[in-house]
Image 1: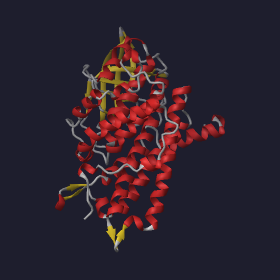
Image 2: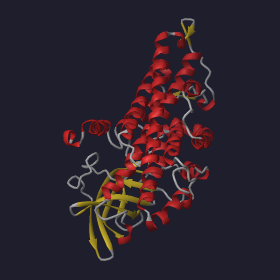
Image 3: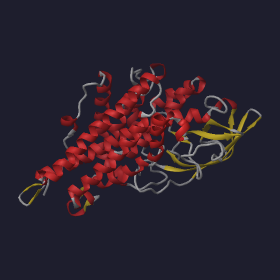
Length: 412
C-alpha cells in the first residue's frame, strides 16, 4: 500500500517547475509567512473543513482568528490602517490566496477573498470615515464582513433594471428593502456592503447586520466549497444613516465592480493553489504506487499528462502575478484579471480531474474506512467547479477579453 504522510504533507513539486526570478523580495517573504500559516494551521484541519456540510453555526471563527493573528489581513493594506504597506499589495494578496487555497478553497474564498478583497478593498477605496473606522478593525480581525451584489434574478447582470433591492431616501438616511442571494459569510457577518437601486442609478451602502429588519436564511447546501457559507439576506425596510453611503450616491456599481475585478484575480490564484495541491498528491501517489511491477508514473501517458499540467500551472501562476502587478502599477488590471480568472479556475478543474483518474479509487474516495485514511482529491474536484462560475462566469470573462480585442462598439 502507498505510504500516505500524516495530513498529506506531500512534496511541493512547484519547487522544481516554478521560478521566483521576477518576484520582488517582499512577495517572497509574504509567501513564506502565508505558507507557514497554511502548513501549520490549515493542513491539519483541511479534510474536516472541506468535507463538513454547511450549517448555520459552521463559520470557522477559530481559523478566522488565526488568520488575523498571523498578520495575513495586513497584507493588502497601507500602514496607516495597520497594514504592511507593501509596494505590491495586490501581488502579496494573490500569493496569500494561493497558499490558503492549496489546502482549502472555501477558507481562501470566504475568509480572504470575501473579507480581505471584496469587503476590505471596497472600504479602502471609498476612503473617509468608513475607511478610518472599519479598515483598521478588518486588519485586526475584529469583525466579519459580507459583500452583496447578487440577487435571485440579478447576478452577472448588475444593471439598474435587474437589481430589485431598493434604497429610498428618508430623513437622516435611507430605507433599504430587498433580498440578496449567494452572500458569503452572511450567517456570521457583522456588517454588509450592499448594492441597491436608488431611482435610476445604483448606490452602495454599509449596513449593520444587527439592524432591525435584517434577516439571514440558513446556509445554502452546495456541491463544494462548504467552508464558504452563503445564504440569502433579506432587508425589510432597514434604516441606514446618510453617512453609510459607500462612495457617492449613484456610483455604487463602479464602487463594487472595482473590488470584483480584484476578486477575479483572487479566484485565479485559489485555482492555482488547488491545481498545485492536486498535482502534488497525484505525483506522490503515482510515484509510490506500483502496478504491473512498476510505478504508475513510469507510464508515459501520466508523465506527459502531468508535464502538460506543470507547464500550464507555471504559465497561469505567472499570469495571475502579472495581473496583480499591473493593478498595483496602473490601477487597471483588465483584460489580465479576466484572463487570470479563466485560466486559474480551468486549471483547477483539469488537474483535479486527471489527478483523480491517475489515483483511481483512491482519488475518488473521500475516506478509506478500512484504513481510517482521508483522501483530499475528491474535495478539490468538488471545490474547483465553482471557480468557473462565480465572481463573473468565465463566459463573461471571455467577453471582457474580446472587448479589449475588438472594442466596445463591436462586442457590446
